[in-house]
Amino acid sequence: MKTADDTERVIRYADMFAAMGAEPRLRIMQLLLTAHPQGLVVGDIQDELGIPASTLSHHLDKLKNEELVKVRREGTFLWYTANTEALQELLNFLYAECCTRNKAVKPGDLVLIVQASREARFRQKFYERGMKEGEGTRAGGFVP
Image (cartoon, rainbow, N blue to C red):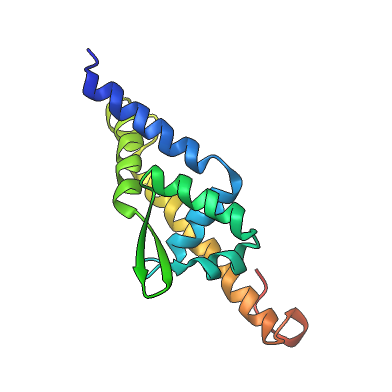
Protein backbone atom coordinates (compact mmCIF):
# COMPACT_ATOMS: atom_id res chain seq x y z
CA MET A 1 0.00 0.00 0.00
CA LYS A 2 1.33 3.42 -0.99
CA THR A 3 1.87 5.97 1.73
CA ALA A 4 1.75 9.76 1.52
CA ASP A 5 5.57 9.75 1.76
CA ASP A 6 5.82 7.43 -1.26
CA THR A 7 3.48 9.64 -3.27
CA GLU A 8 5.40 12.81 -2.38
CA ARG A 9 8.68 11.13 -3.25
CA VAL A 10 7.40 10.00 -6.66
CA ILE A 11 6.06 13.49 -7.37
CA ARG A 12 9.45 14.97 -6.45
CA TYR A 13 11.28 12.55 -8.73
CA ALA A 14 8.83 13.24 -11.55
CA ASP A 15 9.53 16.97 -11.19
CA MET A 16 13.27 16.30 -11.26
CA PHE A 17 12.97 14.19 -14.40
CA ALA A 18 10.75 16.84 -15.99
CA ALA A 19 13.39 19.47 -15.28
CA MET A 20 15.98 17.39 -17.10
CA GLY A 21 13.49 16.60 -19.87
CA ALA A 22 14.35 19.75 -21.82
CA GLU A 23 17.32 19.25 -24.14
CA PRO A 24 19.28 22.33 -22.99
CA ARG A 25 18.90 21.38 -19.33
CA LEU A 26 20.01 17.84 -19.99
CA ARG A 27 23.08 19.19 -21.79
CA ILE A 28 23.77 21.48 -18.82
CA MET A 29 23.58 18.50 -16.45
CA GLN A 30 25.86 16.47 -18.70
CA LEU A 31 28.38 19.32 -18.85
CA LEU A 32 28.29 19.87 -15.08
CA LEU A 33 28.88 16.18 -14.50
CA THR A 34 31.98 16.30 -16.70
CA ALA A 35 33.23 19.20 -14.55
CA HIS A 36 32.47 17.47 -11.26
CA PRO A 37 33.38 18.13 -8.48
CA GLN A 38 34.67 21.68 -9.07
CA GLY A 39 31.80 22.76 -11.36
CA LEU A 40 31.70 25.61 -13.83
CA VAL A 41 31.03 29.32 -13.77
CA VAL A 42 28.04 30.57 -15.71
CA GLY A 43 30.19 32.12 -18.44
CA ASP A 44 31.92 28.80 -19.13
CA ILE A 45 28.58 26.99 -19.36
CA GLN A 46 27.35 29.66 -21.76
CA ASP A 47 30.48 29.47 -23.90
CA GLU A 48 30.44 25.68 -24.04
CA LEU A 49 26.76 25.30 -24.90
CA GLY A 50 26.12 28.53 -26.80
CA ILE A 51 22.99 29.36 -24.81
CA PRO A 52 22.09 33.07 -24.46
CA ALA A 53 22.57 34.42 -20.93
CA SER A 54 18.89 35.04 -20.16
CA THR A 55 17.89 31.59 -21.42
CA LEU A 56 20.74 29.94 -19.52
CA SER A 57 19.68 31.72 -16.34
CA HIS A 58 16.15 30.33 -16.75
CA HIS A 59 17.45 26.77 -17.26
CA LEU A 60 19.85 26.97 -14.31
CA ASP A 61 17.07 28.32 -12.07
CA LYS A 62 14.82 25.41 -13.03
CA LEU A 63 17.57 22.89 -12.25
CA LYS A 64 18.37 24.67 -8.98
CA ASN A 65 14.70 24.75 -7.94
CA GLU A 66 14.53 20.97 -8.40
CA GLU A 67 17.79 20.60 -6.41
CA LEU A 68 19.61 19.06 -9.36
CA VAL A 69 22.39 21.65 -9.23
CA LYS A 70 24.13 23.47 -6.41
CA VAL A 71 25.37 27.05 -6.59
CA ARG A 72 28.19 28.69 -4.69
CA ARG A 73 29.39 32.26 -4.91
CA GLU A 74 33.11 33.02 -5.03
CA GLY A 75 33.60 36.75 -5.29
CA THR A 76 31.62 37.89 -8.29
CA PHE A 77 31.40 34.40 -9.81
CA LEU A 78 28.58 31.89 -9.47
CA TRP A 79 29.83 28.32 -9.65
CA TYR A 80 27.35 25.59 -10.57
CA THR A 81 27.88 21.93 -9.76
CA ALA A 82 25.74 18.88 -10.36
CA ASN A 83 24.02 17.70 -7.20
CA THR A 84 25.27 14.15 -7.38
CA GLU A 85 23.40 13.19 -4.22
CA ALA A 86 20.07 14.04 -5.89
CA LEU A 87 21.08 12.20 -9.05
CA GLN A 88 22.09 9.17 -7.00
CA GLU A 89 18.69 9.28 -5.32
CA LEU A 90 17.00 9.23 -8.73
CA LEU A 91 19.14 6.32 -9.89
CA ASN A 92 18.44 4.41 -6.69
CA PHE A 93 14.72 4.93 -7.20
CA LEU A 94 14.89 3.53 -10.73
CA TYR A 95 17.27 0.77 -9.73
CA ALA A 96 14.98 -0.41 -6.95
CA GLU A 97 12.13 -0.82 -9.40
CA CYS A 98 13.95 -2.23 -12.40
CA CYS A 99 16.67 -4.33 -10.87
CA THR A 100 15.70 -5.60 -7.47
CA ARG A 101 11.98 -6.16 -7.31
CA ASN A 102 11.09 -7.51 -10.74
CA LYS A 103 14.56 -7.91 -12.34
CA ALA A 104 13.54 -6.11 -15.56
CA VAL A 105 17.22 -5.23 -15.96
CA LYS A 106 19.93 -7.39 -14.44
CA PRO A 107 22.25 -5.40 -12.16
CA GLY A 108 25.28 -6.65 -14.10
CA ASP A 109 23.80 -5.24 -17.31
CA LEU A 110 23.86 -1.74 -15.80
CA VAL A 111 27.57 -2.07 -15.13
CA LEU A 112 28.13 -3.14 -18.75
CA ILE A 113 26.11 -0.16 -20.02
CA VAL A 114 28.16 2.25 -17.91
CA GLN A 115 31.45 0.68 -19.01
CA ALA A 116 30.46 0.83 -22.70
CA SER A 117 29.43 4.46 -22.32
CA ARG A 118 32.73 5.38 -20.65
CA GLU A 119 34.72 3.60 -23.36
CA ALA A 120 32.79 5.37 -26.11
CA ARG A 121 33.40 8.78 -24.49
CA PHE A 122 37.10 7.99 -24.11
CA ARG A 123 37.39 6.97 -27.78
CA GLN A 124 35.56 10.12 -28.89
CA LYS A 125 37.78 12.41 -26.80
CA PHE A 126 40.91 10.63 -28.02
CA TYR A 127 39.73 10.98 -31.62
CA GLU A 128 38.85 14.68 -31.19
CA ARG A 129 42.19 15.40 -29.55
CA GLY A 130 44.00 13.72 -32.43
CA MET A 131 42.02 15.69 -34.99
CA LYS A 132 42.80 18.99 -33.22
CA GLU A 133 46.50 18.17 -33.17
CA GLY A 134 46.53 17.32 -36.88
CA GLU A 135 46.75 13.59 -36.32
CA GLY A 136 43.83 12.62 -38.50
CA THR A 137 43.46 9.20 -40.04
CA ARG A 138 45.89 10.01 -42.87
CA ALA A 139 48.61 10.95 -40.37
CA GLY A 140 48.24 7.68 -38.55
CA GLY A 141 45.97 8.99 -35.80
CA PHE A 142 43.30 7.10 -33.97
CA VAL A 143 40.43 5.72 -36.03
CA PRO A 144 37.30 5.01 -33.97
